[in-house]
Length: 97
Image 1 (cartoon, one colour):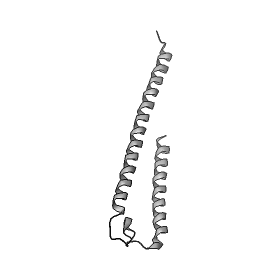
Image 2 (cartoon, one colour; image 1 turned 60 degrees about the vertical axis):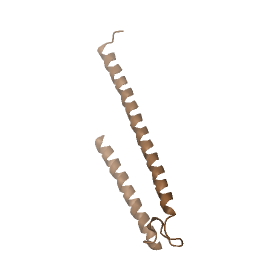
Image 3 (cartoon, one colour; image 1 turned 45 degrees about the horizontal axis):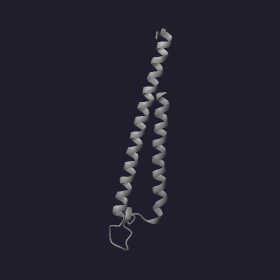
Image 4 (spheres, one colour; image 1 turned 30 degrees about the vertical axis):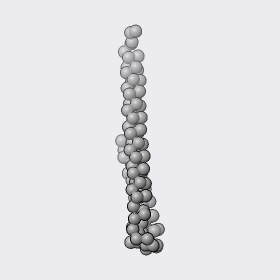
């Protein structure tokens, strides 16, 4: 089957799009799998170490170091960090477009 130049370019672009979509899907699946494995490993480690320590003492996750009033400050710091990461990602994506 003979293609005109315009039809040949359209076919090349279509095939390139299919290849790129397959590649992006493969990368997304690999990253999702890695995130899932990391989550399971993190939960396993936390579950393994949460029973350790002297009974009767609050020693899980370093809770004995922090007072009860610092929870709000810690939550604010974590949310600020996450917000900063999200803003950075959005800015980089907008800059690349």
